[in-house]
Length: 198
Image: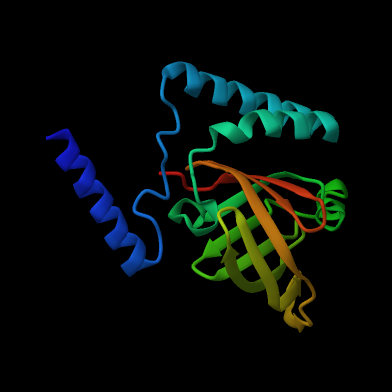
């Protein structure tokens, strides 16, 4: 009976892989075998955010390395778990930090919807900067992107169309239903939390 069940699962997996273009089990790979695993993951996340507040990149990278083996998703670049709106918690990207360090922005978000990526930086005084682009998964963790349009609104003025600038890739090195860590082609790190993880 066990052998028959295994064969049936393999056949179903093959059917979903070949017809839908993604794995039936791409979202979850038995992420937390025990309550101890879940506790360890929560501890590492808390430690990571603490190191982010301090701004110690070396320690941030060390904690990320400890967290990566616990990633709940085996193929994050094509996983449905990646497809949602994310709140940026911390990044090393200087252009983004310029807005937050000078207290110019509100909550910075990134939305991944199918093959479309949108970054939005709302301004405290009203308005926003938004860029949108296309996505192309490549391998298990890597996703290539290219921005195709940008718009800027300042207070009551706008939006104004801007020339989109930027292309590259990001590797999603850790992903679960509520937490995501990326590294990218510019050697930057992005840490995000799902806005709606239900």
